[in-house]
Length: 206
Image 1 (cartoon, rainbow, N blue to C red):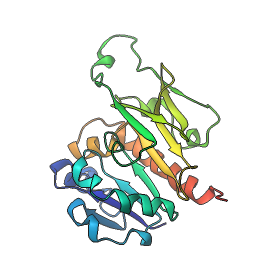
Image 2: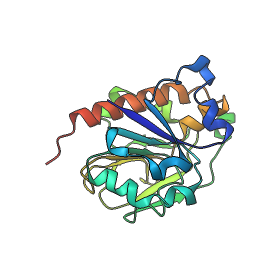
Image 3: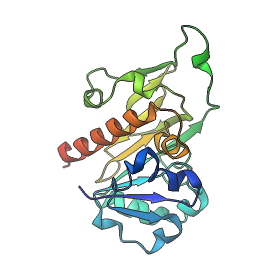
């Protein structure tokens, strides 16, 4: 599977490829700098990942290119705060992150499997999803996968609106891998991306 990542100029974008002794330096077949996205042919890639905390306005300037890619069978992973302004049928509602829930004895972050039998849980354990999250996704055609205590989607998938699949996560593992802290984000990223590749290969589109 040929994978690309849209990345930016922030230190955590660059450090993602060098931290962990360069574990992820060759994870993607191509790194696309956000400012060069307008000139790229995305149809060469089976999977496109948009790194966390990209400059949202520059990303929105490529809205039609992104939608064209999805409508033609491309698959996209998008992390928090980037969906608004690109996907008209999806609202990304941002929440203040609870960074310190874990310091209280016996505390837990209220995240749950929407369906314990979902295939993603063959690749992840629920505990791997718990550091903090930045919001939820709302809209039509969204399959809820990981939810908060209100039943709102923290991780979800849209396999109906496009020929390709759209994967949305309000967890930001690449950011923390680039910043060099939050160890649980490494097994989360590995399992999450392994599930996505499996899902793409086993999705039957009409």
